[in-house]
Length: 295
Image 1 (cartoon, rainbow, N blue to C red):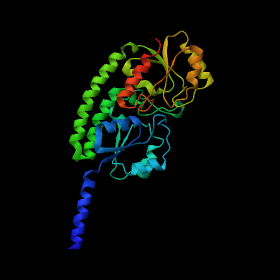
Image 2: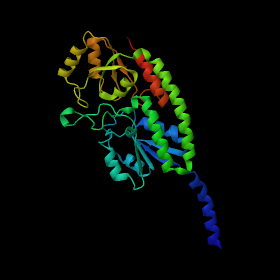
Image 3: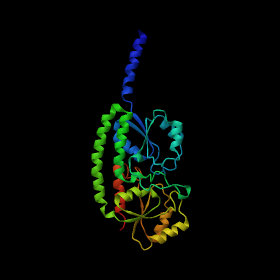
Image 4: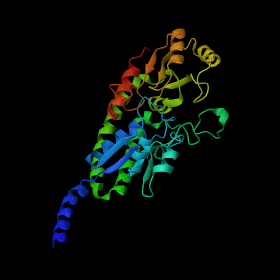
C-alpha cells in the first residue's frame, strides 16, 4: 500500500514537469536563433552557437557546443557549407539518432552557384553563396520551413507554431514593403565589399558590387590586389565600402584613406551592433546605415 501511495505521489509530481517540457533548439547563427524564438515562442528553448562577432565559417567545436547539441531536439543551421569546418564534427560526436536537422539555405534560391569548385578559387561554396540572411525575403521562406519542422518534432504544439508563423508573416510582409520603399534611392548604387557576404542584400536592393577587397573569397587582401581595387574605383561614384562585424577593417581603411569612400559597418546578423538586437531591427538598421552614406 505504501508503495502504491508513493508511486501515485511521484506520478503527480512528474506530470507538470513533463507537461512543461520544451523543444530544445540548437541554432548555429544568431539570425536562426532569433527566428526560432519568433516561431517557437514559449514552446522552445534556444541555444545559439555563435555570436555576430564570430565568422561562422571558422568556429571551434567546443565542449559547450557538444553539450548543447546532445540535448537538442532540432538543430537549425544555415547550411550551404557555411558551417562545414565545424558542424560535421558536432553532428558526429553529439547528435542522437532522433535529432532533427534543418538547413535554412535549402529553402531559398542560392546566388553565385559555381559551375565547378577547386582550391584555387578560394573559399567558394559548391552549393552557392551561403550568406542568405542579408535578404529579408529569405527569412520569410525559412520561417515556413521552420514552422513545419517544429510541428513534426513537437506535434502537441503544432497549432501554436502555425499561429505564430501566420502572425510573423503578416508583420514581415509589411516590414519588407516598408524597407523597400525606404531604400528606393539605393537602387543602382555601386559598392565595394570586403567579402562576398552581401550578394543577397545587393540583389534585393538593386545595388552593384564593383570590387572585393579579398582577392578571392576567404583569402586576405594583398598589397597588389588592393592597388588593383584602387585603380578600378578611381573616377567612379562609389557609395560605400561594406564590412561585417568580423571582417578585418584594415583594407577598408586603406581604401578609404586613398579615395574618401565611406566605410559602412553593417550589422550582418542579429547582434551585429547595439541597434540590431532583433530580426526587425537588423534590416531597419542596415537600411538606415546605407541611407546615411553620401551619394
